[in-house]
Image 1 (cartoon, one colour):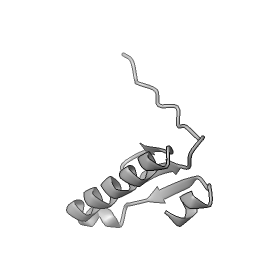
Image 2 (tube, helix red, strand yellow):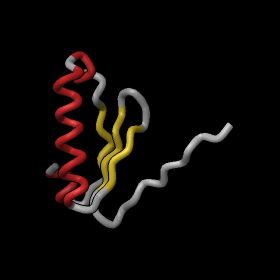
Image 3 (cartoon, rainbow, N blue to C red):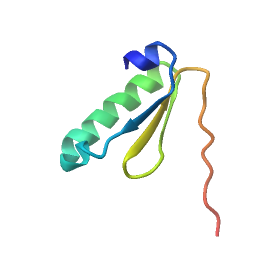
Image 4 (cartoon, rainbow, N blue to C red):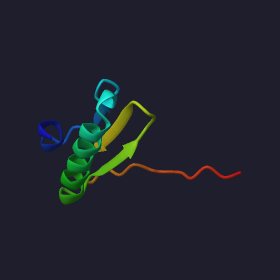
Length: 66
């Protein structure tokens, strides 16, 4: 949260927290709420990484097409 307040882009490694799925879900939910309130963005990069951006920085999310 402090890094987002400083307007930094954060690549968060959550692999160690994956051992506690309930805690991971609640933590990501709290981050999602905070990022939404500050008009930032959040995206899952893979199973272990989440990208968080401050306001005015949006993540382009593409849908895979078959």
